[in-house]
Length: 155
Image 1 (spheres, rainbow, N blue to C red):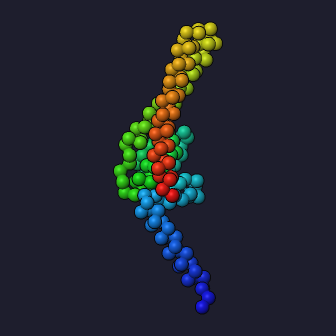
Image 2 (image 1 turned 60 degrees about the vertical axis):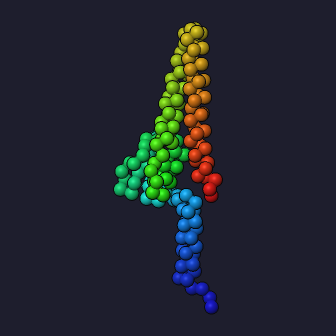
Image 3 (image 1 turned 180 degrees about the vertical axis):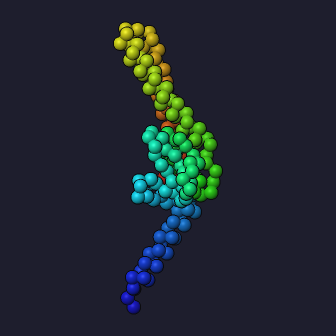
């Protein structure tokens, strides 16, 4: 007996639902791209307002943000969609990442200005501060990426 379009669609719908439930049991909510370019994970929407990311609920109220990295926003939205609390440690790490990015940029600008003014000591000190901030920034990014990779490896 040939399958009608209705029966074929119902089978496809059941398969899609089963796949979504399997991923949910592994701790992953399947994200979807909305027409306006935002990403929806469950009932939560990730919105980018340069240079930050915000996680909003279905009513448009920001529940997390501003976040510096998209990876943080994705993990937070996934946790919220699963009914978990947002990971405060992860969001604090993201906050420190933002601080270190700013600190690196400011120290680099000071170093360039000092070298231009022929003040080698101040330039060296500012370069050292920029390098230290860069290392700390990378440390915080790796910490966030490791949490994101755990989520990504579940697929």
